[in-house]
Length: 124
Image (cartoon, rainbow, N blue to C red):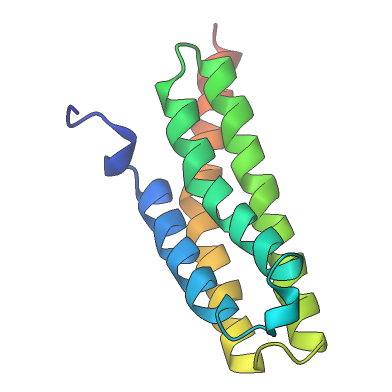
């Protein structure tokens, strides 16, 4: 892959970091949650960098923007799910705070990409 690939995007790199953190923390969830909350939060965590990558691979800015919005929506889902996991006692407040911090760190560059695309599309 060339240097202009999605792998060079800070948003993608931070999303990968978030996914690793989610997988690590969700290992502590109860075994009976393996096919519900654990699976759901992991799916969302995987969705963030996957949507960034897929959007980057699309040919049009409109498609790219759509996938970036999908990634942002998955960040909101992760936030909701980790809050629920904490309230249910599946993870500590510290673990939840680490995930929420990672969400913020991933959301910043992601929003920057969305804003940049919005501006480019506005001037077309």
